[in-house]
Image (cartoon, rainbow, N blue to C red; front, side, top):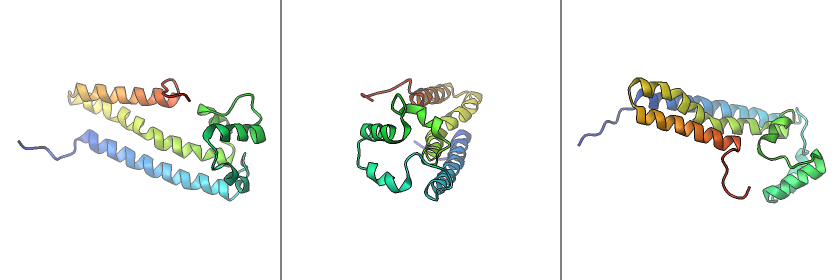
Length: 146
């Protein structure tokens, strides 16, 4: 039984998009981190105080940050960090979101090619992956007690 070891057009396209997205996310991560640590952008938590919070569980960290700095009625959970993109310490979340979301883009982009070569099963799976990942990222799908 011979196996085809050639990558399909969709596999190459997926890899190309993933590579570009990874480099873009990594570059943006370096830039946003520099903006934060160099003090170019203001931050919610001062750089010299951040180590105080490192050892805390996430819930305790959120309570402390909210109590000491944000003073919001509810804890900053889910996508609420988007309201804080003007601050260097929260701007760092943007490249993480890009790196996390690039797979969704890859699945969406390869789907038309899968349909074009009549690989309906893979096309449907790609759509399902994109939908499930999007729903999970949105917070609509969740697991556990968080």
